[in-house]
Amino acid sequence: MTLSDHSPDPTAGPVPDGGRAPAGTLTAADERRSARGGAFSMFVDSFDVYLPALVLPAAMVYFLPQDLSVEVKATFTTLLFTVGLLGRPIGSVIFGNLSDRIGRKRVTMLSGWGFTVVTLLMGCLPGYATWGYGAITVFAVLRLIGGIFLAGGYAAPIPLALEQARPHRRGRVGALIGVGAPLSFLVMNTFLLGALETLPHDSFLSWGWRVPFVLGFVLGLAYLWHYRGVKEDAGEVTRRRAEAGGRQPVVALFTEHRALILGVFLFTCGYWFATQMSVSFLPTLLVQVLHQSATLSTTEEIVSSVVTIAMIVVLAAVGQRIGRRRLLMTWALVMAVVVGGAFLALALMAGAGAPPWLVGSVAVVAKSVPSAPLGVILVYLNERFPASVRASGYGIGYMFGLILPGLYTVWLLALSTVMPYEIGPVVLIVGGALLMFAAVRRGPETNPPGRAEAARSAAGSAAEATA
Image (tube, rainbow, N blue to C red; front, top):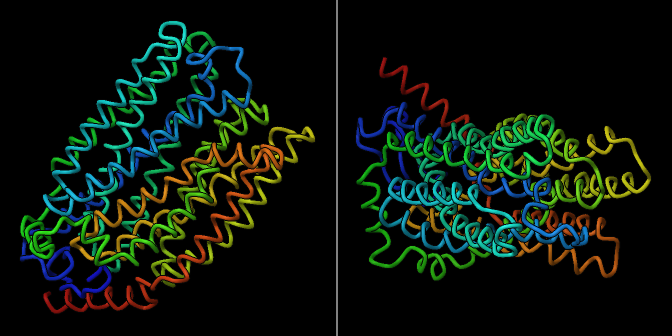
């Protein structure tokens, strides 16, 4: 049974799949706190994951010798980001399986402490002048470990928040969680813009780049403090374990649900191929390849974050009304045309000496459109899996889909042998969007049109009857 397959008693509070929560076990306040915990998790996760991609293009000279070529420096920058992504599939297996067996909250706290400490350690590293290439090697190892722990932030708090949300509120909860990602970009880039504009270059390279990592550590502590108050029904944990029948959830996922996990993997793989160019590679492309200023790139990130937040809210509401599958299929085609076209325009305009404001405007489009359906995607993927393997399926499907796209620096270098380096992203974006479209088209609709309205009407009728 999936998230969308039950019809809860609207007066009984949030209800996990497969039955009704005991009266008074979970209140509406508990539901809201869990939803905020999911959003906080997305915020901290995005902050820690994408921090190197945003900060290091402006500070890479601290970790590398100055005589390296532009392409090699860009490759080192993207490899540091990629290493963190490659740790997340490992973590999704570990923490997804644990989340289904021992409970979402316990796993959230365990993984939260892990990535919080690792973030602080990265901000304390010396540079090339002190450790040589050892500095960037240790940075990469910490990124790998942090990526493993960060996977727990997907596999535990997000499924719990959506499980505790009533059907007609899932679109809204998904939007709240999804907004955490661009909000983290907004915070990071606002700080980075201020640092680039006010700090001398030497000060930024020696200590200014460290401040966001220390801030990430503080945010991690705040996240852990908030999540202490989130409730999880112990009976639901026991029921999930009983449904597994003694089998490890990850084993059941790849035996009983092989076709499902394959379909989800193809979907996420396509989505991330289409999205990584925007969320990860765009700052490097603008600063190190197209020779735009770091200030322009950071300003573009800030504007894009505001636009993306608004789009996530709108698309989540539309998906709740017309169906999440229908919206995702439509948006995959939008991404192929609009985002692919935007990256092509960036390459052509930069080569033709276009004014910075025009380059920045096109970059905003390239950045905001791919992340707009994030709230819909979070709900759609969780609705696809039964409760007994939901954390494993969602975490593994989402994270393993990052592996091939996470190696985008390899694909870009390979494509550069047959086309200009700056044109390669267009190929990856269009190909990924079309794969996403095909994968969603083969899957079911998890939220048929009219279902939310029926659930809302039932809730209203029950409230009137109670009154």
